[in-house]
Image 1 (cartoon, rainbow, N blue to C red):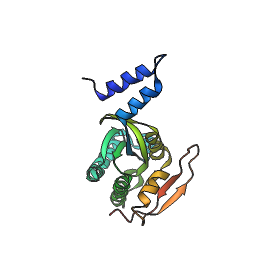
Image 2: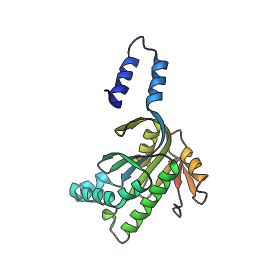
Image 3: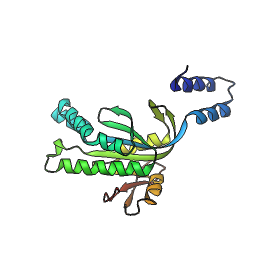
Image 4: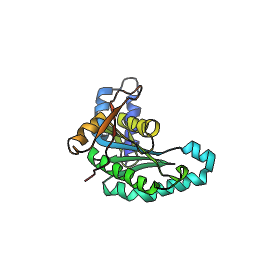
Length: 204
């Protein structure tokens, strides 16, 4: 029996042939694999700089601390760990409210942990969140525009302590969490409007 990954690549191989009925194959791929998910990408501040200054063992300790501090909270809100690569996490949530609630709590936990610590000892979390249709291959992988946007926001744009969300996430979350405040930020070469979650007074 084919795995999900094997099935997808068989369909992609068919699509690549000269006389392929691409609209029909695309429809089949979407039917099998396309789902709406909230995609979260997290990163830690200063991987390259801190590794150069303090060594890889120091940064591995920070990665371990991130895992100990935050993993249970992600799972508590229904988050699924799809990838853990070095200091980065790729997470999936069924609804953006759960994702924002979870990551705001994670930011609060990090802030409490960091009190009184020197800069190089802090677990400083950068977060990007998008929501929309993606191609999900079981619990192995996920592809799509929202993955790319969340990754860019979490890895390249967010600063330590930032939780950045797309306009879709802001609208969906804002209707259910009216006490949360959002500040729009400008991100060059990105079509989406991007917002920083300013208030961490919730979740509920």
